[in-house]
Image 1 (cartoon, rainbow, N blue to C red):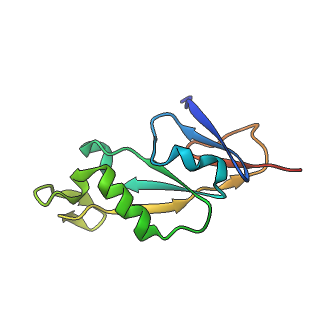
Image 2: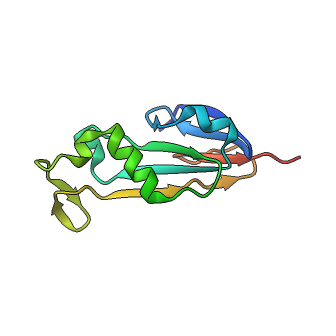
Image 3: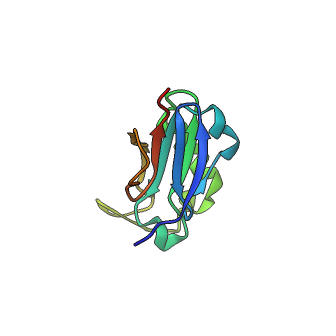
Length: 119
């Protein structure tokens, strides 16, 4: 399967993001040294895509989750039952992951990747 990517330039190199992902703060891409992927377990079934968060430091995952919940109010709705790895819950299972870095872009893996600039 061919994935279409959006390319952002950051302080550490180029960041390739699948087009289907939602970028929460694209204006921060240029100054970013760390990139995070946010995933909501079973989010696709509730209209919540994978998301990207650019940061110029090691961001606190709790702060990122707060921004995600403001962006997608369904994540705080108490009448929605979420399928989580631990069964049905009122609160969704939200994962925050640091993006992997590679040194050349000849073969991009599926998903998000940062290609480190080599000077």
